[in-house]
Every structure is written in structure tokens, then in C-alpha cells.
Image (cartoon, rainbow, N blue to C red; front, side):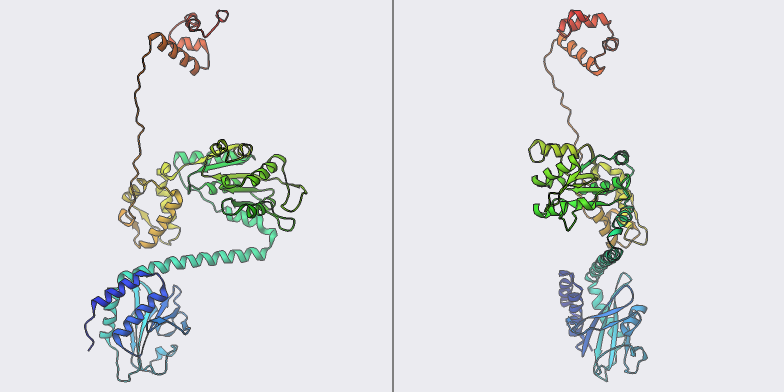
Length: 500
């Protein structure tokens, strides 16, 4: 009879499993612990995948040295994954083991599923070479008791594997897309860009956001440069691409250059290219060039870009032959270019060329009315089942300052969607968010000594300024005759007698 479970050892195992998110180490430690508890010939752990396939990950506390994998429903592990129930076989002639591969010395085998919130992570296999050993329900209960004590790390591993599989699927889709583009060849680059951009969907219904979209629609119909500025993560690049889609250049290429990610030489080559390899400017000819973090452009490139915008011509880095260029430049920055130009940190002439029309992207805190729409969109984009955010959760989200703006909200909601299996997302499912206190401007009443004559003069002058200097309207507004107004202005020395 086996001894009672040592809870100190189980707690130590739980701590170890929580210390590192790596499925090989995770399954390896579980197999080692089960092997020590049962002391049989062999203990294996298979990982189960979403398609029903299984693969040997660990054996007797170590990462598996042999490759052993089963398709959906194959082997003992496949059967247990499909039924979600433990199974033991005390006979070598068990037909269920016909598709299993194992050591010839194994006489009997016990298989128990590792389950988290209804999802199977893998299977534990305890194999004995003792012909007199018979596995039974007590053995199953023993394994389940161990698994119950390490429920937290098992749930943690499930969430990690979900996130990892999502990344794998995304990488695979990107790889397939790249291969498709390679097969199509260079002539299809413009159409692929259009197809990619056509999926851009900017979400929001707040007044400040709708004003931005209306301005973008008007600007898109013109063909002059646009400067988009605002805090990090507000969606500036997305708006720039949206402007391209609404413009007459929508059927041509739209390319983005991240000006802060390359050094001066690399950026020069990337933009202007060589005689053998076209730069981004030539590839975007006829379309739109988006300059992200434009304030990071080195001085030498600023001068070359200014010449391009003035003359409509450019030269490659290894030639003096002028090339005609016709493109629209949309620049993006979190900084005010005017301030940088005033400080001598940005070419003033280029600043005026880029900033013919400026659009400020509001921060997320300024768009509180959009937070619910954005949150539900981000959360349900990665889930098949639609989830709903409660009013208390929305209250918590809208009271936060969002220094990372929309990017921060997107990351938080996607993480919440993965971690929470419930349909309704309440405030308890959200992490702690610091409430931002809106500072009210303190109105300070100031007093300065002033005669009635001076006060009257100030009021009359302000009234004239407000009415654009129209003396007839000003007199009517002040409740005096035009002649009286002229007399007062004459006394102030503001008009000559001949003007009366």
C-alpha cells in the first residue's frame, strides 16, 4: 500500500512549476514527481494539441530523448484525450494498445488526463514491467490527488499554451502570406497593399474622434502633405493609412518607413535606394509615403527630402541622375515639429512643407465614450464566443489615465479575454488600474487698481476688437451714439479729428 501523499513535496512541486513557463520543463517535473511516487518502470507525459494529436514530452523527470507522436485518436494517449477519462490496461493483448508504441518489457499501463477548465493539456502514463502488478481505481485517485494539488500551475500552463498557440497561428499566417506574395511576383505589390489596407477599421463614436475622421476625409481628397501628431499609441499610423485609402492614390502603393529604427546610412539607402535596388520613395512613386517618427530624420536626410518635395526629383545614393517622383507624404510624430524647428532641431523649411495640414490624434483619455466599443472589439477579435463587459468594468476602464493609449487598452483586453473564461467581464477580472484625477483649472481672481476712465477705455477697445473695428455696431452695442464713441476715441488719442 502506498504511503500518504507528502503535501510538502507537492507544494514544492507547485512552486517549481510556477517558476518557469516552459512546457518541456513543466511536463518533465510532473513525470519525475509521479515516477518518485509510484516507483514503477517508466513514467511518460504526452502533450495534447488542439487538433487531438499528442506528442511525448517527458520521461522519468527528463525531456524525452525519442520522438514519439500520435495523430488524433491514435495510441492510448489519443484515446484518453478523446474520452477525457483515465484508462488502465493490465494486459499486453489489450486491442486499445495496438496503435501504441512502447517498450516490450511493459506489462501494464495507467493513463490519466491532465485537465484544466475542461481542456486537456496532456496525459500521464505510468508503465510497469511487473507481470503481477494490476493498476486499479486507487491508482487513478492517487494521480488525480496530485493533479488537484497542482491545479494553479496547470491552469497557468494552459493559459501560456493558449497564448503561444495564438502566436504560432499568427506566424504561420504571416508566413503563408509572404509565400503567396513571393509567388505572385513584384507586379502584384500594389494590389496586395490595397487588400491589406482595406481591412483598416478605426473604431469610435465620440465627438472628438468623429471630428478627426471628418477632417481626415476632407484632407484625403486633396493631395498635399499631412502631418499627424499625438501621444504614443493613439492610432496615428492607422489614420495615415486611412487617409491613403480615402485618397485618389488608393490603388497605388502605401509604404511606411520607421525613421527611428535605422541609422543614418541605413535610412538613406532605405529611402533613396541605389541604381540596382529601388528605395522606398521609388517603390511608393504614385502612391503614399508614411514617415513614422519623422522627427528622428537626420539633418542630411531632411535636406534631401526637402529637395524632393520642392523639385519633385530625387537621386539615388550612388547616382546624380534625377528621377521624377510623384508621391504624397504623410508624416507622423508624437512631437510638435514647430517647437523642434524653433529650437533648431528640425529643418524649418521642411517642417512647413510637411505641416501644410496638421491633424492631432486625441488621447484615449479624451475619448472615454469610445472605451467600451474598443474594449469589446479587441476582446472579441481573438475569441469565437462574444464576451460582454459589465458597466462596473467600463467604469473602471474609463477612470484610468491610459498612458499607453489604445495600444495599452488592446493588450489589456486581449490578455483579459484569454485569462477569463466567463462570458461577462466584470471589474474583478481586470487588473488594478490607477484612477486618474482630472485636474480642474483654478480660477484666480486678480485685482488691479484702475480708474473708471481707464476701465471705460479698456471696455470700448475690446468691444471694437470683437466687432472688427465697426464703430457703428460698437456704438450700438455700448448703448451710445456714434458721435459719442468718436469723442471718446479722440480723447483716448485713438483717432484723429479728421476721422470724425
